[in-house]
Image 1 (cartoon, rainbow, N blue to C red):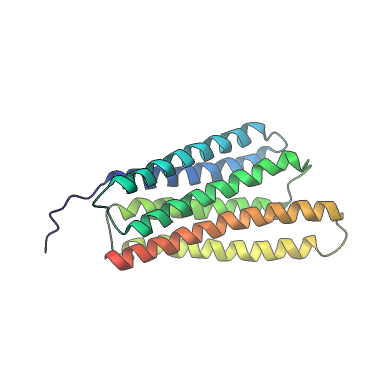
Image 2: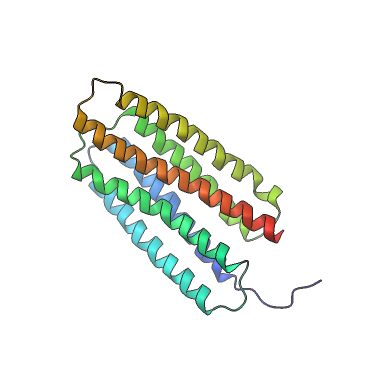
Amino acid sequence: MFNLLPKDTVFYDLFENISDRVVASATHLQKLTAEFPRIDAAIQMIRNEEHEADNLCHAALDRLDRTFITPFDREDIHTLVGNLDDIVDAIDALVKRLPLFHVKNIPPGFVKQTEVLLAASRAVDEAVTRLRKSRKLSDLSDKLIEIHHQESVGDDNHHAAMSELFGGGIDALEVLKWKELYDYIEEAIDGCEDVGNTLERIVLKNG
């Protein structure tokens, strides 16, 4: 049976543009760790990405309110947009705290997490891009598996970092600072998995 009602393809442009902001934010974060302590430019770039992501999210939700026929369920569109925005928000919240906390160095465990986040973000971006052309789980499955894999690696890194922080020998104030910073990057990585779960639900419902 053919669906003769047009569907608003502009939503895909918005999804992909927000997803691009996710990758850009993760890229700037990794660059920040490489160039530390020169962090001001990267922080400003991430703030710019966060503002742009917010604008795109507002545009998507406004269009959702005004559009009769949507590519898939309204609830799933709302969730996907929110999931993507949450990743950028977590990265932005993290970098704002670096100068606030007077961070003096970046531990290797945190650098590892920025690499995991960037890999997960790239997999998210590719999966979101494929959504425009396919509703087959098999067409997205390799990227969804990659997202879940990176989230698992991120969990292992997070546990190792927490063990090191609370193992003794680190100043209590430094423990408090870095626990919060690690929690934010963990939140961003978990956000990538949330996007993957939403995409999986979308293709299963609409395939």
